[in-house]
Length: 100
Image 1 (cartoon, rainbow, N blue to C red):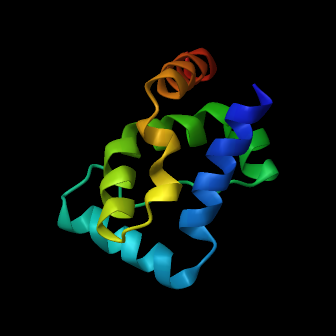
Image 2 (cartoon, rainbow, N blue to C red):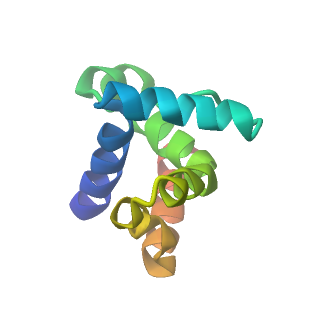
């Protein structure tokens, strides 16, 4: 569970921690007419108050858009994990477990 948590936390923090990248990601989501306009930021307070599943579920729902965004920016290392089918299976199971 810890490696999964660390990977999601790193991915979210990578998208949100740099202002330019975050603005570009939000603009990208608007341009592809995504259902969501942003990914939730990882903070322990948010995870305690809203439940860990919220962040996991949002990343799961945006995973294809996140991969497309990183491919467009030619940041292939960042999206490597979201293209690993074994990791995605574990991520889907863990997300389902937390959200339902």
